[in-house]
Length: 203
DNA sequence: ACCGCGATAGCCT
DNA sequence: GGCTATCGCGGTA
Image (cartoon, rainbow, N blue to C red):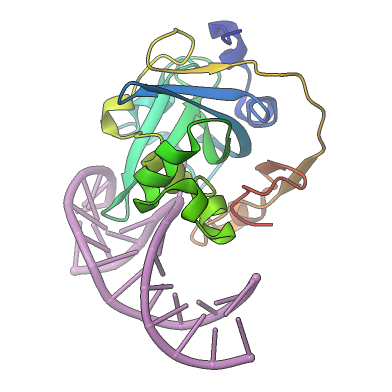
């Protein structure tokens, strides 16, 4: 079942937890990729020096963060990579949830080819995990770039999110990654992941 | 497995 | 001009 628009109106801290276990659907190159969300981070512009929207910074780049929840925010980073956020909350809030890791559910050979130009069964165990165990790695694997920016994730197009199978897991709550400049926000426990999942980017 | 480093371009001051 | 919500490599273990 696709997640409706209402689901995304929750705040980023709630949504970061709620998105764990949900399933991303991505249709590209004639295949339908499915993967479970296993690691997320919340960013809340109003109080968070790590957020692109901190201090009301509303520019062409950060505009998606200020829209109503349920769309994608895709930004370019370090001259080479993309990262994908799910926008949460109400209009003008400036919040979102960074998707940091996925567990692939199908099309393993397609993903292996895309990431390493190899067949899946030729990959080392380390490379099998590395297909989607980071925010930019998953963007490469799932062909997510600027053209996915602003896409509505509550509509059944080529990029959306489903409820997925009901399963139970424990959520680990810890500090976020790669925000050494963010002063007191460095220590906010706003990273969440499924305990024991092998695709998380870092323990 | 872990550590250090360089790549690379758009964004913001 | 300085910085960046990262990755992959090569070296060490």
